[in-house]
Amino acid sequence: MTKSISLRKQVLILTAARTVLNTGYRMMYPFLNTFARGLGVEFTTLSLVFTARSLTGFFGPFLAPIADRRGRKISMLLGLGLMTFSALLITFLPTFFFFFAAMILSALGSLMFIPALQAYLSDQTPFHQRGRVLGITELSWSLAFIFGVPAVGGIITFFSRFNSTADLAWRTPFPFLAAFGLVSITLIYRYIPNTQSLDLNKKNGWNTIRQVLSSHPVWAGLVFGVAISCANEVVNLVFGVWLEDQFNLQLAALGAASAVIGISELSGEGLSTLFVDRIGKPFSIRIGLLFSVIASGWLYFFSSSPLGALSGLFIFYIGFEFTIVSSLPLISGLYSQSRATLMALAMASFSIGRAAGALLSPWLYQWNFLSNLIAAILFNGVAFLCLLWMKPNEE
Image (cartoon, rainbow, N blue to C red; front, side):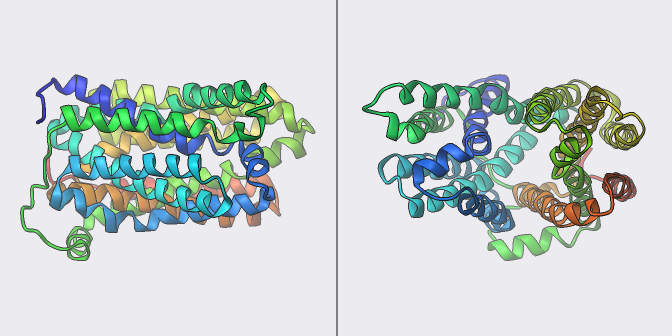
């Protein structure tokens, strides 16, 4: 039986649960070599697992209709259940095959949980207040990097000290993830009510997707998502290489850049949470896009020193995070009848943009870094134009 609590407490529970989910996702990159050694595979082999994990984003729109047809809570519980099961799978079956399977299952869990969470909070919040509420849950992305990932490193380091557990240390974070996953499932089951789409017609998943895609504002929102993600990725993928080529400071520069990214992500998300509802969602997005364009110019004209380069990256990532977090409440209103499916399509558009940017970025960098910066500016320009057609059907 669900116990009634305030929306504020529900937001805290859902943000904490998403932080657990994001920690499981983000911890893989800093400790990639640790996991590769533990599994007995090459770094390049393990990187293919994460490529496959990224490609699962295309399945999101086919999973999200569960939240529209069966309820937001059910989809969130299923998503967290998959994440928890994947952590237990690695704990008890620590082989490469089951690690691969666990990564795919965990990614599918995220694709079920996140759109359902966004749809649920959008259902519960008036459009003019939605930016603050969704923005709070988006803080979980940077919180996972700032708190969750260091905690994972501490757990691995602690168990590496003992001869009896040194060989098993790489998988010690997974039981903790499973435990926090179970706690999250319990809290959501106890305190979050089950709600459904405004469209009570029980269509199958494909029909729901076709219905959402019949809207022109939705298409504008999806192209917007591809454009801003591509603009970010054409710089994001090669900035480390550029720092090395420009300043010959590989480890020091990359370490500093990681700190810059974490702080700028939190800053962008926090600023959007505070201001998006006050100054308006389209205006907020324009500000974020403008910051990204300014940062692209900064990275060309004022990057003669590592400090100037890192300052430009700081502005660039603030602009991107501010833009993407500010866009979520606007996108959520483009087709409110099947909101979870809409948000899953938006996640898929972000994945397509990252994939396209990853393909373009090395090719552009063959000429010079300026080519990447110009491409980022052009893609942000496309996003700015798309904003003109992103008219929500609720206000």
